[in-house]
Length: 126
Image (cartoon, rainbow, N blue to C red; front, side, top):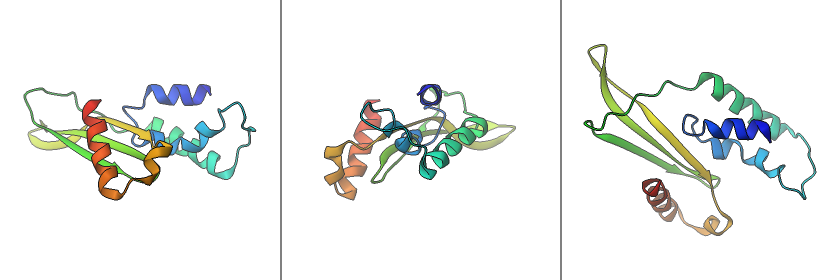
């Protein structure tokens, strides 16, 4: 639980954290037996690695156009806000922030187009 809380603090810096941590969140429920399966160990290792190797963020500049990338899958929604800024005299595109969340049970019935639309609306609301 402490590890998930710690990594959630950095969720804006970690790509697809909600999807990566899905199996770990499942063992936090009261009715679930704590068992570290291979899937959970791999999820833990991926998150731990992401925490130590996260890319550097660009400081947002309100005078420059933002680029929004979205993606959805059967496990979650993700969005990435980027900007192209001049760094060392050359244009460099880099992340400003990441956001992700797990799919809710009622959203599992959505088709691909509906999922992408949901992802776009959800991200714009955030």
